[in-house]
Length: 250
Length: 238
Image 1: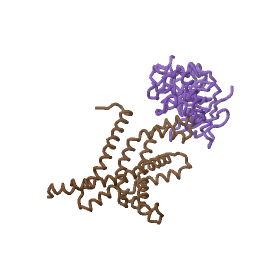
Image 2: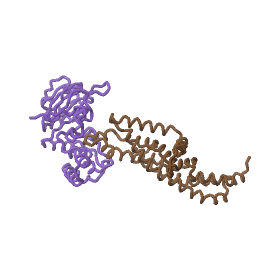
Image 3: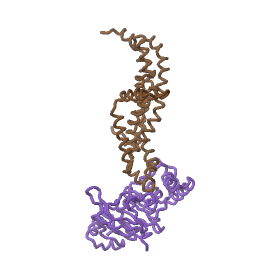
């Protein structure tokens, strides 16, 4: 297995609030890794640092063994290789679904309008959204909007896809359709990183699970090991609370 | 106590009105012209100023400083003072015809002042677009100028059309200030007619012509604002 992403002692704080203290981990090509932990444990910040939406204070991040956090590096070519899907979808409300997907294709990759349209049509068809292609985002349900957001990120054919609590803003009955899309992505060769509160899903889909607490990796391993035999007391405590809240069967 | 017939004679004299009205309308064409050629300049300059003020690159700090100083000065100086200073002052330094026309420099002064106000409207619009939209665009590899052009500006402009119309109504009236440095537009024409007969009816006539334009524009702006509120806001609470 070769390392797709390597994080070396990554630290990030916002003012006095040190969200990430010292994060070191390696993720292999094609691997699916879920980040779990309490709210505020730094899951989202970590993903935003990997996409370079936040600059790390300390440490480094390597993509294919090349540092992407070096000062003065143009972030745009790197972002094309690392897609991100947000909790709140963040579709462009003034553009049709088609244009949401083709914007980066024509403007960033310089693709012709016809080629971009074909790519968008194929992707949206794959996610069952063909009939929405000329609609605007506010006409779609949350689940449909999130599937469009995934298609928009995938259009650039990224090597790594970051999914930042993508079902947290959805009504419960809409979660399934979005998770089905993620299931479909697994095994396609893309490296998936998820920040999630869906413990059952994390357990099902992940190759490895990473538990974040106090700005460090408290525990990382196979889903079976993390969910059934956690060794770190913080993981044990967190999982007990999750089970008590009914979000994971014990 | 002035008697009613004297008030009527001085302000609402039918003969004076019918004499002046065509002359006023003719002069008003110049107001419309000034409005028409300053507006595109104002909108373009304002968008440029608003974008410059929203840049984040450290290297562009001098540009930011310049546009902040520009808007502060333009908004801080009375319009009429600026029109005098530029409209009389610049032709006075010895420019050749036609560049010594107070009409040109008066329009420039008006445009400079209004571009600062309108830039603030655009800036408010740009800042009202949520940061997550910028994050989404940047995460797709769009540069910051592509993000501004394709994602931020189109949303910002849509939101500021109603307040923008407000400024345009205001500009439509302030065009008359240019009369103070010479050009015979409607206000000056009214002054000439007033002096001729020592009668104020021409000013009332000029006011009527302004109102015929500004009231429909104001109603239209209100309608736009209401529509925008209905579209974006929650349903009305009693």
